[in-house]
Image (cartoon, rainbow, N blue to C red; front, side, top):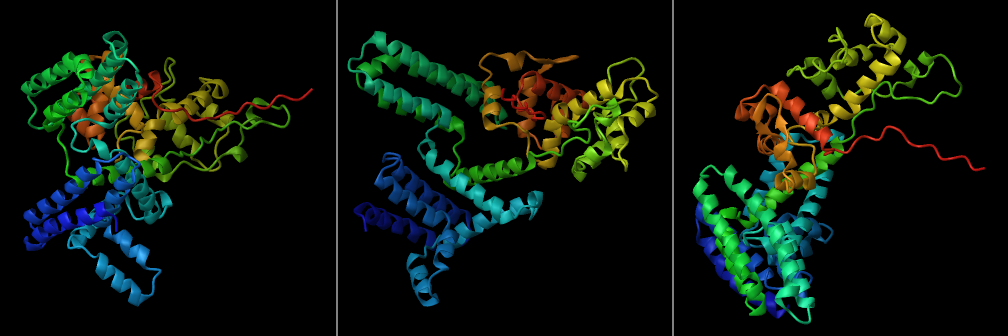
Length: 476
């Protein structure tokens, strides 16, 4: 056994003894469990990311947090040997850790089902757990440091750049420091947004945080030249740590685990059925109505989408109509429901159904396809994913939150100049539904959703579905 492992086990035994003495399932026992995990993480932070010492410590950490994994690894052994090893490795915290992990599983099963998108829950769980472990180990150094991971990455890069300088002068340090300060300004914006979401938020908290940043900036170059940079950084982190609401180690990991599970579901839910009028290349030219036939129809949209559009609770589908006089009835919902008929009507029949007022091939078909494939696609993704929030990547959400250029705040909602796009996104990402957002902002839900979808399209925040592929050129 490595000397580090022996030392940690001895120190942990004192904490385990306190855990045994506490009342089972009591807040005191929970507090000691959190203290055990924090003790291990703080020891791991003392060693470099890929060092042997850190691997040893994180191994101890996982054995305490996930005893069920140990059970699985022992299944291949003979029963007698399995029990002797289990007894040797058993820890007093195993029961509590198993219960905590099972609660997360039960929560996800209850909320998203045993077979999300017709996929095994265990497959989704295992993928999410693996991804959460990797994220946890990658971000271990920021636990209880007061900063987030983008800020930490910039800090690490900054230290590397400083170390690479053979001679350090105010002149060659200036651009590097400005680069770091720019990233810290972004972090300050993220921190302020986080503070505004707290129930005990007050303007005083924002005023108290700002001087810590300014003090760090003012001393930055001098601290590098005087070899006190790390001390200056530690003081800065310590000052803002209380405002960053550090979670316990277990809650920190469980939050990652739930988010990664939702990522797995989002990935599964991204595929939306092709519209029924997907273009088919004809083998020979014919009448324009022969280009898209009932035989070319793809699979029907998911039942959830059919019910969503049929019900149209917010009126967003029936209000999206062709932009021509007296064509309000030629709307997306009407076309969608018409195309569900068996056999599916041809474009000629659709044109006739709407009184031959607009050309089905050039107008109705393209309007329907744009609505289905592009405009409403983010809303469909939200609905298919259940209550999983916005169909935006973490990078896009961070871009909107940082809003370095201020473009998201400048985009105002028509007739409601006090509402901007960033405000809508932040509200939606922290609310359970559009109904909650519309209550928070006090605006009509239909107008709010249209504004949201218009902005997603304007800023190109959601990748467009590929509908055509360029044919390869013929070789001469």
